[in-house]
Length: 81
Image (cartoon, rainbow, N blue to C red; front, side, top):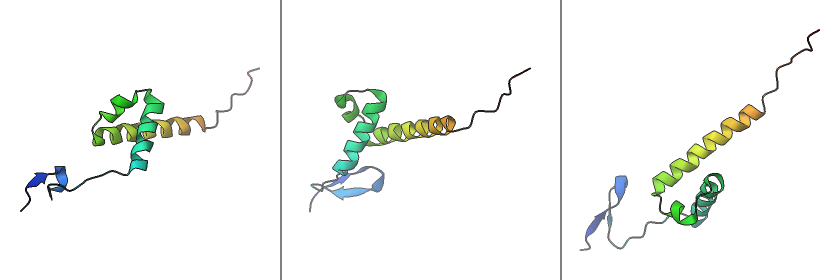
């Protein structure tokens, strides 16, 4: 019988099982955080998966707010006179 190892909040998995995260998705997250924070690759790779996802989500929220603010029509200011 293979020993079990704890695998976070999802429970127990048999040792030797491989847990992976899609390489394309990982590259997207790394590029997104690097572009916006100007952090080196090593620092981003050192982040825990959940932390990296949280930074990416927070960047997305900031970008959404900035985009919404930039698309608001300027209020009409008639020339006083």
